[in-house]
Amino acid sequence: MKYRKSDYSVSSYFVIPLSLIILGLVAFFAAAKASEALARFSAITLVLMLALRLNGRLGLARLNIGFSLEALRLFRGEEFELRAEIRNSKILPVWLKVSLERPDALVPLLEEGVQGESTLLPFEKVRGTWRFKADRRGVYSLGPAKLSAGDILNLYRREKRIALDQEIIVYPRLLPIHSPDLPFREYFGARTTEGIVEDPAWYEGTREYTGNRSARAIHWKASARLGELQEKIFQASTQRKIMILVEGEGFAKAEDGEGFERALEIAASLASVFAESGAYFSVATDRLSKGFSPILPLGRGPEHLGSSLELLARCELSFGQSLPRLVSLMNLQGAEFVVIAREPGDSVKKFLSPSPFRQDRLFFVFSRQKPDETSQGYRSCSFRELSGSTCVEDGVEEDGETGSGGARAKAAPDGSARKVAGQAPGANSPERTGT
Image (cartoon, rainbow, N blue to C red; front, side, top):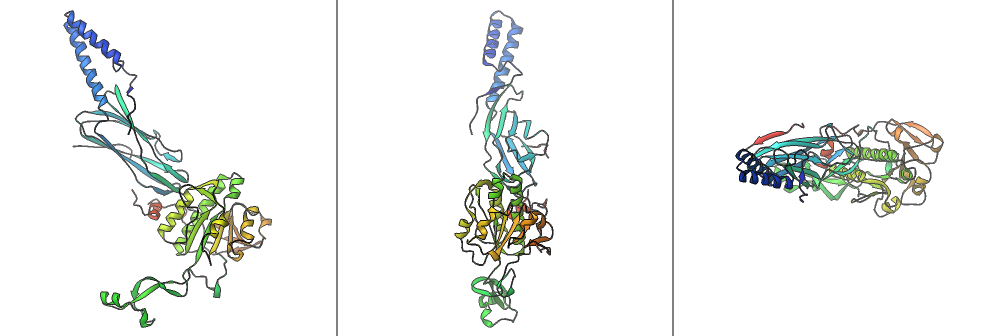
């Protein structure tokens, strides 16, 4: 941490070295002229100001400050706290002021903003909190914090900057959507999340023996350990696999930033719905995502959902890579594709022409959809329809049933984003303690 050049308060001229020199000369000549009262006053004032100057120079010495964030991952619209703890570990009192730089997307909930001022006695500790609201999706960092410390009269002070070095990831908001009744064709008409045949190569665990399977399914070691018969559980040979593709070219050409944010919220909500249903899913985008892969492998569970939400949080409107090229690099045989785009037209031709995508496994979700653009031979839905209960196929509206995994309208106030990311959840008047 670097110390800045000392700052002088405009409230007094005694902090200026020239004034101190003049005061010393006055004391000297007063003593020489036997003006005892003036000499005593000048000497006491000079000693006091020199002591305050020394106190100001030592203001940052043995002054410990620490910051902690209540949450590093949260959904748009959620609130979080930044806690600060400052301890004065010396015998001198100190005046201090703390201020914090912040991005515009993290809005403080207090009118005075992100700053505080206090006086610490010897070996005293003070705590304080600031509360923020995540107003926009993205990846942000608070800080650096500027700490000013000086003498108790605030005549002389020094400053230093402290970096927080922590990223705050704001996920897209989850919308109250319905799980779309994806009309993909499956062999034998099976459309279950789990496959109907177990794969003996994918051992998953044990359970109490039901007697409905052959003795070869018994796990003898586990049975001996538990004192009752246990049978092996294997994962299904086939799983429902869904690929969520966010096509941002149309939003970029139209400079539709708000529509792109809505598309990311739809993608996040669908990922949450599929995660709750137990399906394997993946997310990919043709937009730039700094420091993160633009495509994720198929997976399921809270950790995979957290990675998918982080990818969507890091998306920018600028171009990254072509979606068909990204998908062609992965083995997605049997996968179903949900394409989120701005509107029908040139932006979706790449998916309908000869490509890694089978047309009967494609489902489009459009931000803008005109009535005369629905009869194009593919299944589609608009953002508004996805929030309701109708989908469009070949120009005909169908009533769809609400899926079992409807996304939450907003992240729960008890910290649902922290649960997704595997983090524990965490007044602005300072709390003081002394030792």
